[in-house]
Amino acid sequence: MDYNNCYIITGASKGLGKALSDLLKVDKNNLVIGIARSHLKSVANFTGISLDLGNTNQLIEKMDEMLPEGPFKKVVLINNAGWIGEIAHTGYLAPKSIRDIYQVNVIAPALLMNAFMKKYDHHPGEKMIINVSSGAAGKVTDGWSGYSASKAALNQMTAVAQQESDLKNRGFRLFALSPGIIDTPMQETIRSAPEESFSSLSKFKTFKSEGALSTPEAIAKKVVYLIANHSEFSGVLQDVRNF
Image 1 (cartoon, rainbow, N blue to C red):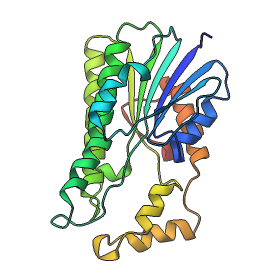
Image 2: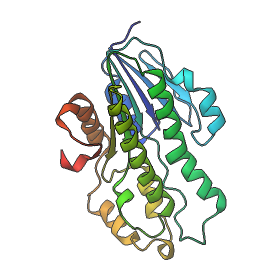
Image 3: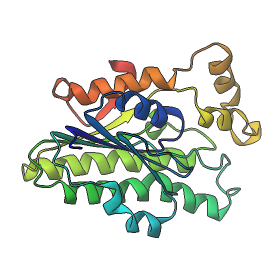
Image 4: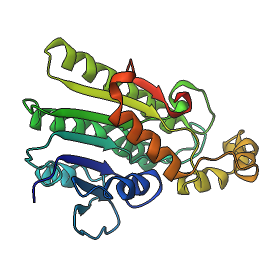
């Protein structure tokens, strides 16, 4: 079957990634490719690919499987997968934790962006990359050195790639999107951090107890709105709390 649109979503087994997959696959004109470490069943217009984004060699090997030929009127890569990493102060982090967070939050999206822009360089339809970032990229939060720095790197990669596309009129549209605070397993991990490693612990516990967390489904609708109405948005850095 030919599809009008193709959406490639990492971290598709839970949280925002699952909500996006569920929302987008309702339209049978969409081909949705979900990527996750856990098994994802392929059904109808949804193709599940099991892959650990921290395994760089495996990611490179499966790249062609994740980027179909088309033709599509619209093709969108959503780098949603992200990891909070080990919450600890510098000097107390495990070396493997430092390596792993950059592999998942920086290297994997960089490889996917590079392959996507090469694959669809001359694609005549709409082509877009949404990199799910974080407000933490611009804040100093103890215990989050890896997460904050990796999201800042993601923002900068996105901005540079947009400039490169514009310089040669390649037609790509890229956004680094801060999704706000979502009620996901990542928030559970944050709330379980030791207070001596994370001075903001009580604040994040309050977000949950006071109902200040957004649902993945609500934020998924905002991401889809951004994709559908991208011409209304100027600049690469966006925040769901502004629209």
